[in-house]
Image (cartoon, rainbow, N blue to C red):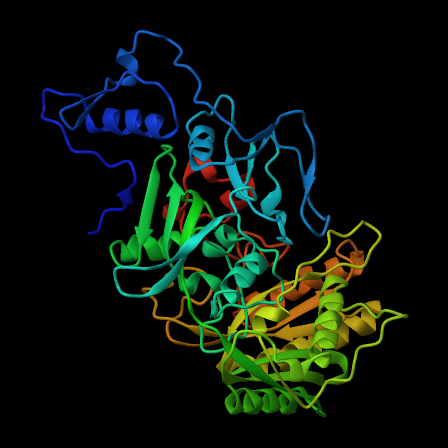
Length: 502
């Protein structure tokens, strides 16, 4: 079985010398910039075990980044969850991350890594622990060729998706994953759940990640790749950050290409007919995205086709494309809430553009603003008819009883890889097509929206057999989701995640 490679690996010493564990600890400290009892002689690292050091209290490892320990509160983007960690840190180096992990006195457990804090669930909550935000580790370190001859970009964990797209676009490159929300960070996506109806790509970000460097529970920098550590690497990408703090990724890139979208609006008389139409439209194109008004069985369809090589949206598509982009950005920002002063532009039958140009960033809303909230469920494409039918019946019944229904439902299509590439969680059923069917709303704290979503969990997960996400599906119980216990390390496991381990 392949062993994870560490950036602090050193030669083993003979039996009369210090233990390998001591050597690694000393070398980790050296990486973090600490003076230790280690001596370097003749190419060997000599170190003493911690309990043999004369000082009863070793000096704390230096930490250089932002550190706040005055009891401030932090919230997720949607302002639905608040946490008061004992310590909040924004590291500015990998050594900073190591310093945090190896010092549970200054940085109490658990250590929970976050990026832009976009999650709609309680993943941000870590009261009394250490909240480690990676946003200052946001450098794009360059494009290189890996051992398999692939073009890859080396990027730090805190880099936002939009920044990465712009950087690659300026060099004629792209990654296939081009979801509209560009604030998500590379590290959070590399070990989390994502979705996009991608052109010529699987449709989830981690599928394109071919190597990660992370800090493990001992404070060691470890590198895993699909070429050397295939099984361990695949499992790590399913871990939601519970196996270690990602600091750097290698992501496969390709030459940039353009997209041609064909827009249409369909209205059917039954949920079965709507599902059949969506299936047909999916089969006709390279990728499909649909926004559905379920109560009226009306769908706005974006059929996407590869339009050949190209980096920027053609001038001939402007200004129509930019109107569409701004309209979609505002719709996502406000959770598809109707806006009395903003009218959506008419959709052209077809338009050619760069999908990277459609990736947007969003302002942090105030508590009284409409703002996106949603639920996520993964189903196999073969079950789409039943999903739409039962969701339609449930929504109609709920609307009759409570006068409430979501603003819209969005459908993404994701190509699944072999189980060896995605062994746990979403998209882990092996080759095929997954489809999401996700309700969205504009007020996360609306009691009826919350009641609807909690009740619909039972339908989507337990009746329809859908998979849920701990970062994109709210109000889950341990009966709704299981995260394999072997993926979690105590130092990184918050109470929220602990409930799902099994």
